[in-house]
Amino acid sequence: MSYVKKLYAPRGCGLSVTIKNARGKGAQRVIEWTIRQIANTDYDMVAALLDTDTDWSEAIAKRAKIKKIQVLKSEPCFEALMLRLLDINPVGDARALKKQFAPFVNHDATQCDHYKIHFTEACLQTGRTNEAAIDALLKLMGV
View 1: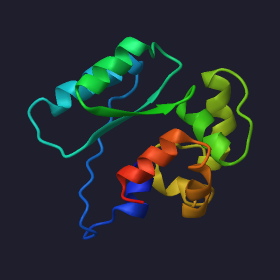
View 2: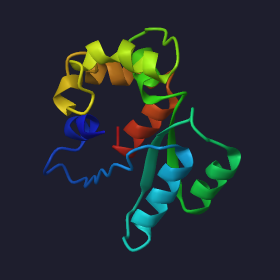
View 3: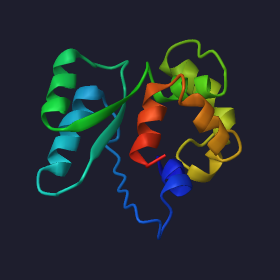
């Protein structure tokens, strides 16, 4: 998220983007955490990027919709989504996918600068045609 913000919403661009980390632990926890974050703050739009491999359900989707949270679903997880952007078929469980993804972010997915080599603007633009979460994210950024 920080990398996408750096690309599309740099300082002085007229768009203010706040990124907060729910630290995962399942879709329900991410949505409930987001609801608590927005309870006393007024944002124009709120989105939550989450994996669908842990406790994602229609009930959670409905709760997010009621609270006006746009859900950006990484199916089944973030690493799989990002591998597909590179035209790589993600294979295996979450642990295997993290291992498969690691070389593309210099073995540290927490550093936004590690995304710039493989996940260029062109990659994101091309990938948005097949990945709804990327398309929605870029639309939130005004692209």
